[in-house]
Image (cartoon, rainbow, N blue to C red; front, side, top):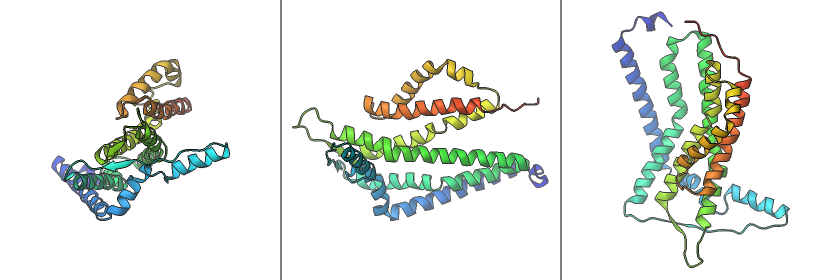
Length: 264
């Protein structure tokens, strides 16, 4: 810890933290305003999985053609059901984009605030940990965007109990499902990192995880049911499989991790 930081009073630390939070809020607001201004670009990304020409669907069509099959095209209409709803959704979506866009800066500011309390070696350790956590979060969001959400949307959006019943999905339902699933999958992808940290502290063993694998599968199904806002079996399976794979990866990570010795 640096001498200048050690000499600071509680109120000086609090003032530094307040400045950090203000900087984070300002950058988030700026990112949100930029996303709001570039409406066409923002919603071209967000609404892309609703289009049958989305890259995931094209790949499915390509794979089907290689096997001699065919994938039927689809068209789902997104509708607006309230006078001010589109404007409100525009603001909310821009805010979500601002939070995601400002996330690297947010992590940087928080690390800059806490870094004086650590030695140089500890700083490198924490920086690496946070960087890996950020990459894992982004991977979870990308997996949801390119795989899980498109499959979920296509299946549920085209499912019909009768040909006489036409599906028209509200824009609010689409956005809320899209955002919640992407966020939850990003958080779920932090599982290997969390298990590694617990193993490093000597609080988790690979043998324990292996012995309670069946219990973990039940817990994964329960967690997936909570994560999936649609509450259908298809989406539940799509979310559960990556979570189970992450659990298996976590076992390997924990098995290869040597716990540190804590001195009291």
